[in-house]
Length: 254
Image (cartoon, rainbow, N blue to C red; front, top):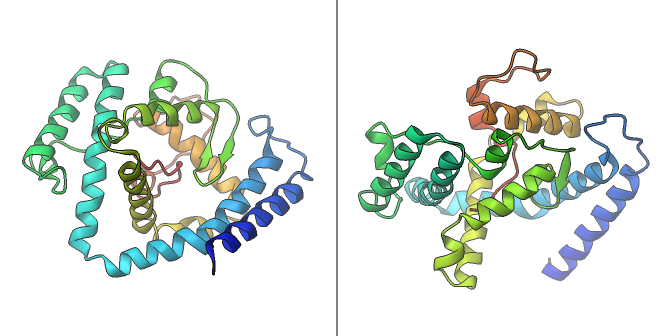
């Protein structure tokens, strides 16, 4: 199928989805934009079915497992730059030193991060982003917001994406064309790594939209509190291993 025709069909699908979903009256005060959100989720699901999933399956099929692991490690190492900065912004001084050391070790001894040497010497991977940093600062997430292509988010999450992009070294040290290619490769690699996990949502959820919305807010609160959920939290308990395995947050290609 020609790319132009595919884009046209996807555009029609999202428009129809939004028009259909806007007929729904939002009852959740945390989700006043439910009509828009459901429409965008329909578009994202269709885009995933017709584009991202086939590409990810092809990537997984042609890429040897050790190369796939190396690519994932490379982008994880780049991500550690932002993790270290967010550690510092959250006043996690000890973790700042650990994650900074992790980046140096993997960059030097791990061949630009393709080998995760740091994990072998007890420097584990942490998950910190600018959305979490703003949450630690007390900035509320705001209403639920589904972004085209990127998925579940919020107004604070959009600010987090901007902040994380600014912390990405690729943005500053590599030409625009190369950086764009790396962003695409990272997105495909992330999608390929999560092919098996999509069954969780498909099999467990009666309403996929409600499932992703609930999982997004649970994951964000869990990460902001480093797993120490407040006693008065009205969110459902969520297993740490399940959080780590099922990337329900927006796909961040950096």
